[in-house]
Amino acid sequence: MTSLSVKQSLAIKKLEKLRVGALFMEPGTGKTRTALELINGSEADWVLWVVPFSTKANLQKEIDKWGCDKPYEIIGVETIAQSDRQYLALRERLAEKEKVFMVVDESLKIKNIAAKRTERTIEIGKRAYYRLILNGTPLSRNVLDLWSQMEFLSPKILKMSYQEFRYTFSDYIERQDEDGRWSYQIMRSKNEQYLYALIEPYVFNSRLKIGVQSSFLEIQYDLTNKLDAYYSKKEEMLQDWRDDANWFLRMTQAMQHEYTLDDQKFWQIRNLVDEDTVIFCKFVKARDYLAEKFPQAKVLTYGTGAFGLNLQAYKKMIFWDKTFDYAQLEQAQRRIYRVGQTEDVRYYMLTADVGLEHLIDTNINKKTSMLDAFKLASEEGKGREMVENL
Figure 1: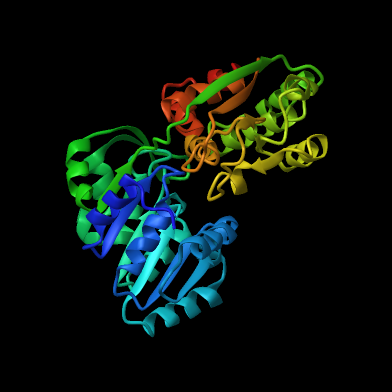
Figure 2 (figure 1 turned 90 degrees about the horizontal axis):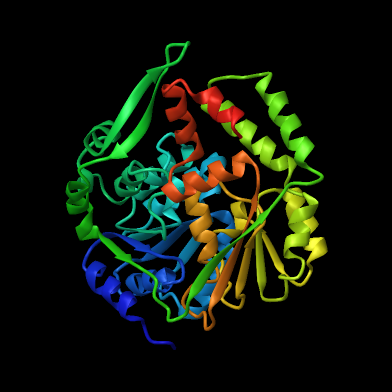
């Protein structure tokens, strides 16, 4: 069996004496094997893995490869949220065990405190003797993503409510809509050193160094046959203008969908694609189109393909559609740039000459969500101006 890497050994040394911990290890650094080593060295009598449903098969392969000395079960985090029957049955099974080791893989899936998956995962976690979270990117929006992950591990880590956490570690603006409901917009984080001091004893964080290089190339193109459809969709949506973040998200998604199959995109990459290529897209119709056009390549959508897959056999990645989510982009890149990769890898990003594409790039570079950008523009009275510039 392959020996542990230095980072894996350091992670085990730090967390093996603790009952709770976080492996914030970049995709490709071997966090699943590290978790298995921690499990095998524990006194656990049963292991519960909570993972995105799309990664269950891949996790099973990892367990088969590295070995697990304890009886275990793998359940999709979506199942916990959607099935009352399975959720209640799972609680009963945990009650029958003495020392459950619960692992939440891709723990960003429980970042939203209002989501049922988060509430139920935290509730189940209260019945576990050991708790471990795994993620390559612990933040996708802002510092508030950390609260529910730490709350799952133990309320004793932060010792504060979500509202107290938000007040302590972020500057934000509150606003009230016409129905009297209050919401808030995070402007920036603060007191980062204090936060780090609170969580550092329970967190192992590593950066990926694998001895090969990665490079990023942007491929710019002008919309051709889909340009009119793009602007028509924009005008159609503007007829129903609302200074509302959900409306903005629906509009930008609809506009991007209009040009996902522009002819120029195919012509720009037709000579790049071979059997070493992974193509990421956002929409199902693009996935089906690309799978037909390029049967030699592996075609994935961000929703299912950005998490949990080990694709070291591939050397090139093409981003057919841009994603609004920085965490999705980073996770996608790490499917091929990870431990076990033996050759330099290259990424290609297709960029159309329209305002929406440049807005996505700006916010990805700032690691800021599109919704936050729109909320800020709305606060400044520039929401409509921002949309008209797309």
